[in-house]
Image 1 (spheres, rainbow, N blue to C red):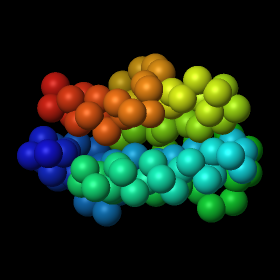
Image 2 (cartoon, rainbow, N blue to C red):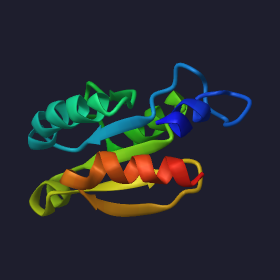
Image 3 (cartoon, rainbow, N blue to C red):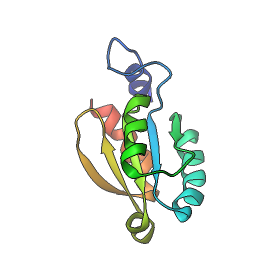
Image 4 (spheres, rainbow, N blue to C red):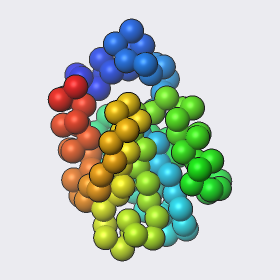
Length: 115
């Protein structure tokens, strides 16, 4: 978590101090329900989590995520709900991958520690 705190220093990273670490992009109602649980779990690990409150298009939600200054976008849609794996995009390096819901908090923490 120490690395997470240092990432929020604007001089060390191009993030604002109030920026969320993770922005949830929700593509359907089932994802909205799951996002409440996921946000609670991620917050228990010390992450700052935000999301769109009106589903809107994926493109508009991704724009909001980018403007928020978040490091990671976690996308939850039909495919993700069926596979129990989130699509995670790192907004700093552009990499995107699937991470099982159960491993999400720990994997993102490891990613931050590797920076």
